Amino acid sequence: CVFEKGILTSQARCSKCQKMLIAEREAANCTDIPAQQICKQYLEVMKEHARFSLKLRDTRQNLGHAKAIKVQIGSLRGLYQALHPEQPVPAPIPEIAGLIEEAVAHYGALENLPFSQIIPAINTYEGRKRRSRKK
Image (tube, rainbow, N blue to C red):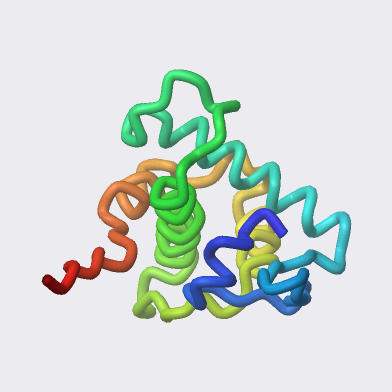
């Protein structure tokens, strides 16, 4: 699942995701290949449009954990807000694939999404605060 980080940190859910254990590591696997492709395209489009705010030169580079979470959860929160402006954004995001499918149905294509509403949500999203070390 391309939203594995967001799902494993309990910030988002998806009905097409299956959690599994590999040795002592938890992983998230997508059970629907077409949904996985649209989610992957969505994240690529979001990375491209948030490139400046993420300080990326090349969108093909792998993101660190904090930036990956920022793109994943921040963009989903912004997308939810754009589609449902009268409702507060739920935490966790309840249905990733359904939200992206709803956006494609509403806007016609991923390229037509309201980036002026989504990118600020990526910029303002803050993940979990670092714990201070005890001395």
